[in-house]
Length: 97
Image 1 (cartoon, one colour):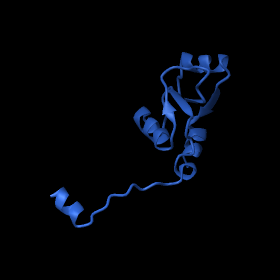
Image 2 (spheres, rainbow, N blue to C red):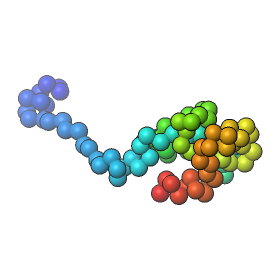
Image 3 (cartoon, rainbow, N blue to C red):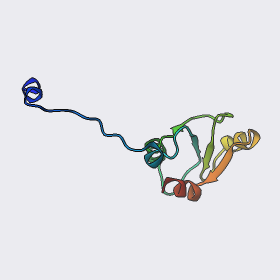
Image 4 (cartoon, rainbow, N blue to C red):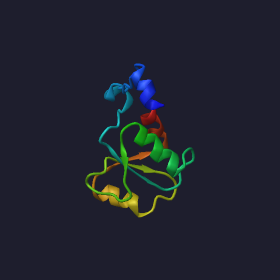
């Protein structure tokens, strides 16, 4: 069936969107710690990945942002020690819009 469609002139084209417009967080690395009010971890991860970022599970000098919710634990301390930018959920929400 596909062969027939191609013989009839069907062409498949990829759609490209400007990276800067659709992926403003390209190359950034996020880490989430603590309980957030508005997002589950899965939702937060999906949101930043759609915008080009990656999510990590441990703090390193390569981490760009640590998003801190309630009861963040030791990852917040590690971020402070490594001078990684710590943001709250409200700031995170603004980055997504």
